[in-house]
Length: 353
Image (cartoon, rainbow, N blue to C red; front, side, top):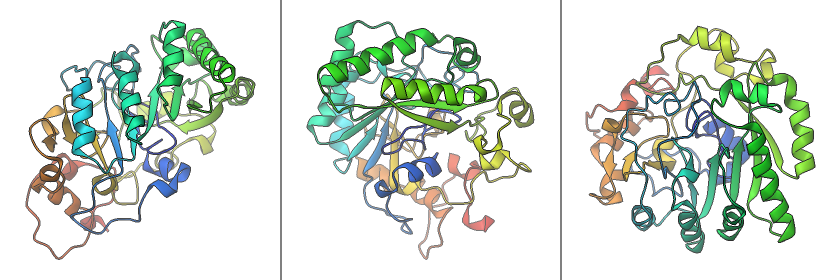
């Protein structure tokens, strides 16, 4: 699931332009979840992890490699056994973002996964497009799973504006599903999950922000605007349209709803900071392969495989050490391992200071 973000843990560093997760956002929303910038090539095991339960989606969002059906990855549904193995391999995990490149609720074991993590005292956040035909039992099971946070991607306050980006989605169905869940929460007096209406602002829906806020308030859900990304933060992924064409087509006129990198002259790197994902979190795809961040779309760029290796061997391997060495000054001998991080233009590297 892309072009989104999240909110209680990794809530927005997971794709605002693509999958989902922007560090700046997450820090703004929940800074206590992140340690101070690590200066070690061998950081402690991460407390925040991203686990993608499925890398396919029912929508066709035009800035998302999954939606475009151009994700360079074999379509995979994570098994419940693989999920349990991941949590066993990374016992430091305290919070899990259970989504990345797909729609989480397409995984038939997703509610079991949430329940299992909750029983292990691991908080879970999910992003969903919620454009799914489900019976009432499904919504009851969400409450019973003890899910902490559910972020619903709903970019508009009308079917017309919503459909500009969420191609294949049903605006009325999403709203109906959201209302079912809020009604059940009230009926059973449940505090969880925290429900967040995430509204990614673009040229087609910016005039509906106030209307959406009012509707969210009437439903009793948190309303959150998110700055639209244009998928220029996906290392190695190429679009048919230039960044200037994408800016012209999608960006809102209201400048405060534009990312800083889109407000003036377009420059690289996109963010004037180091990449903290290499030090503070880890991404695991549906097949158990480990990646250094949530933006990578090519399965050939994996840093390891938890079904074949221990997490310790992966977390401190040559690829991770070499990638971290790009962002910090150090006195250690770093392996000369070329990785996807070498060509990434998202963050400021040491040699760019």
